[in-house]
Structure formats: C-alpha cells, structure tokens
Amino acid sequence: MAHHSISQAIHWFFDWSGTLADDRGPVIATTNKILEHHGLAPMTDEEFQLRFRLPYGDFYDEVLPGHDLAELEALYLHYFNQHRDAEVLAIPEAVEFLARCRAAGARLYVFSSVPPAHWLEQARAIGVDHLFDDCFTGVRDKVDRLPQVVRAMGLDPRETLMVGDMVHDIAAGRAAGVRSAGVLTGYDPPDRLARAGADWLVPDLSRLGMLLPSTSPPSAVEAGIQTAAKPVSTRADRPVSTVGALIHDGRGRVLLVRTAKWSHKWGIPGGKIERGETSDQALRREILEETGLAIDQVEFVCVQDCVDPPEFHRPAHFLLLNYLARALTTMVVLNDEAQDWRWVALDDTLNMDLNEPTRVLIEEVRRRRLPGTRCA
Image (tube, rainbow, N blue to C red; front, side, top):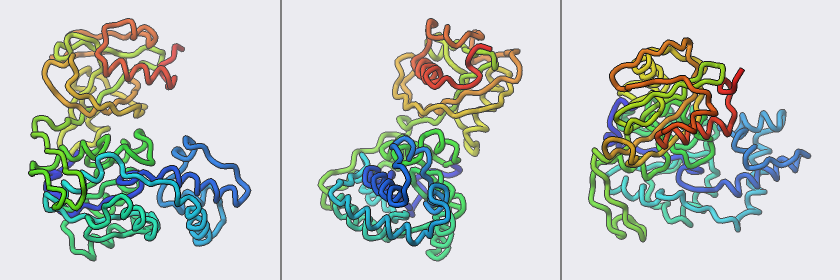
C-alpha cells in the first residue's frame, strides 16, 4: 500500500506499450516472424502473454538461446515495419488521463523499451507526443536505467511515480526508490502483476485518475487534444483496495462466513489494505483477525472492480483482490464482523445465498479447478 498520497507525484514516468498504447497485435505478429525466421513455431496470443517478459533480452534468451540480441533487435525493426498498416490505438482513458495530469501541473515522461522511431510515430498518430516533457525509449533494462535517470535529473523520489503494466515496470520503480502504479490493461496477466508489490494497482487509468486531486477539466486548447478530461470524483467516491480469500482445508471444503454488512449473505473473510502493508500481509492479518486462522499456499485468483454493490450496507467502490489459500487448522474463531461460519464442499457453495463478488470468485476457482478445492 502507498506510503504517500498519489497527489504528491509531480514527475510521472509512463511505460508505453500496454499502459498508454495498445500495440499487442503488431508486437505479437512481429515476434512470431522472428521465431519463424529461426525455424520455430509461432506463439498463440495466450502463450505469448504467459511467456513474454521484460527485459526482453531475458525473453529472447529463453525462446532463442544463444542468439545475438542486436541481431534480434534488427529483425524486430525489419518485421515490425511490415505491420505499419496495423493500427496502434490509445488505451481507453489514456489521452484524457494525460491531459488531467498536465492540468494538475505534473511533468510527464515516457519510459519504454519501444524503439524510438516507433514511439514517435505512434504517439503522433494518437496525438499525445506533445504532452510529454521528455522521452526515454529503446530502454533494454528499466531496472538498471530508471535509477540512473532519477539521479541524473535530481528528482525527489517522494514526488516521482512509475506507471506500467508489467512486473518489470514495478521493479524499476522499486530499484529507483520511487512509487509505482500497476494498470491491468497490458501485457502481464493480473495475477502476475498483483504479486509485483505496486503501491497502487488499478484496472485502468480512469481508476488511477480518481486518486488525483480535484481540478477543473482542461479545455481542448489547454490539453492540446479534442477531448476534455472528466471531472474527478470526491475522496469518498474513490475505490478502496481490499483483500479476501476463499479458504480451503485441502480436502475440498471451503470456509464461508455470513455478515450483516453484506445483507446477511454468505461470503469470504477479508478487508482493507492498511497503510504500509503489502497485499499479502493485509490478507494474512485480516484472515487471522476475522477467523483466527493462519493460512499458507496463498494463490492470487482475480481482481474484481466492485462499484456500489447492492448487497453492501452502504454505497462503496471496492477494488477486490481475491485469493485462494489453505487453512493450517479448521478451528474457526470469529470476531464481531461475522455472525456465522461454515465449512462447505465447494460444489455445494453455489446453492447458498452468496454475495455476488463471492459467487464470481467461486465460479472462477471451479472453472480453473485450482488445487486444494477438489475432494480428496
């Protein structure tokens, strides 16, 4: 969890691909051309997402071991140019969000591994190239480079933020001693990104925008674009990051609790991430406080964006980080937040009066047939 308000950020470093621009189509097509050039089968989109990582040199070391990185970079430029007709679009809300940041007085920088010529062409096509104070593109290893940039520019880490869609972006922020925000719009799957330890984790930039201080929307002339930014919601409307777990006993049974605040429906234990906590620390603390259970084998399952759930006792917007975990014992001791508990066979849970976020989580666990939830 963040140690400072995001409104303190003056210097914003943005990854490009997957954070501000959607270039997955041509990137995957180009990568497959390189694989075919070396006699390998192309990857499906799903396989690419599972295997691709930054720094991209590590990815190529895995799929094409022993090949010269400079040669592979030259092939990438060659084959990417064959896909110039493939349109690279702005990630939804990206243009408006950049304009909001500018209106709030922030300094904006691109910090990306995308080749410089590709970034300039794409940024001009999208219409955002003029919104940045500087750009750092063609970066092979962000973890090495970002600390150098922050030091060379003399930036205060407390006023600096790295925003990206991959674990490598979050690691770069940590290496530079700056805060980081992860967005679930790009290359790394949500479970991988959720474990990276970002200060903020949001579904998209519009949710990150809710954390900005209230400002008047910039005019089209001020923003340099044709669309005006949306007004900021009040602090009370901003999403609250929470953690919760479907706890199993390793023999096919899961723990459900019933609470008044969720209209006496059955759900999972969990709660808010406190200042200074990681999501894993918050999860273990909340489970112990609410049920008396210690847990292990914690596995991330999904993120849910839960806006004003009708079953909750008051209007609220939650960013729900949902996990699966094994209980070390089955002796449940409830605190005053829940009124009842029950160990239930997983297949029987969907016949119970569940709150909707819990139903979504259970259906995802059943679909993926995750270990520990099947009967022994």
